[in-house]
Amino acid sequence: MGSEAYTIRRARVNDRAQWDPLWQGYLTFYESRLSDELTDLLWQRIHDCQHLINCFVAENSATNELIGFVHYLPHPSTWSASLYCYLEDLFVSPSLRGGGVGEALIKAVSDEAKKQSWGDVYWHTQNNNHLARGLYDKITGGTDGFICYRIEADQ
Image (cartoon, rainbow, N blue to C red):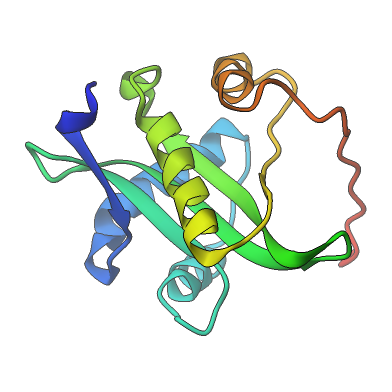
């Protein structure tokens, strides 16, 4: 899909009905489930200008159908005077993967980071997410060598 076939823009409140199936597809891909309440909270946060979570969407220019999204948030860092930007979720409709939409969504976040004078943009993915990792390696030149560990503090 050529870049003229889609537009990257900020999510709008009235995008919910189209964003939700993409979000559910993302959760399914990661074999996860979230309550409707958490999904509602995420959507509210995206549109709350006092909250840090942001969302860009990719929209098919011909049909106005949403075909992908990226969620990201700036945060302070102990290693920098500027904020870092964590790209938390990225999803493109499976039938459109490999056509530049994911790369355009990442570029939109990178451009926003430059505009806001944030420092690094970074993200995680599963080790076996080979298709996405091919794109990420192309964009970044490869991983930074770090491995993610997690403790569930709420349990």
